[in-house]
Image (cartoon, rainbow, N blue to C red; front, side, top):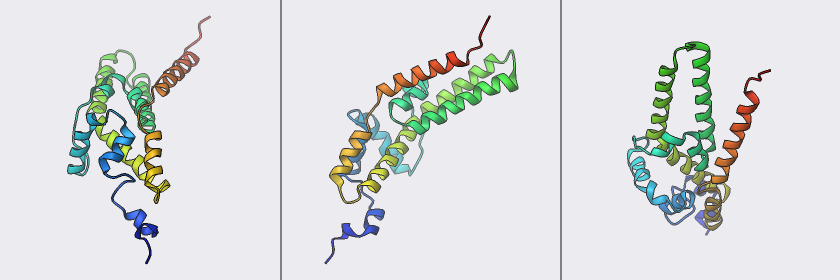
Length: 176
């Protein structure tokens, strides 16, 4: 008799992450602050997707919060949206549109604050799926990988900030 876990289809269709519970696997990714997100994650699970929730760090810190939470894809998308807002201001709206640009920018930040936990839920579950693909028959290694790849990354925020400052200095117009 074969072990059901040895069948390839068992690894692909298994609803459980490589941990005792889904909450344990998510806690491995989120880190010690998981209790702050647990209730929201439960709400998203029950709804089968998005429900508006508010979290203040994306409102104030924008893409830096995404980088801090190791949500690099979302950080890049937020940065591209910010660049698009700057382009619209310069190319389309022109001079005298600062108030409208500020309103649109604040609205975008508010949107990030209302969707931040949901985006984080999606990112955490993407990471769980990645662990299950990498270690389908080794739950201990998968959980260790989740802990290593999860948590927060303050150094990445510092490096991102330094990179943006260098980019801004390089793009600044030169005066003679």
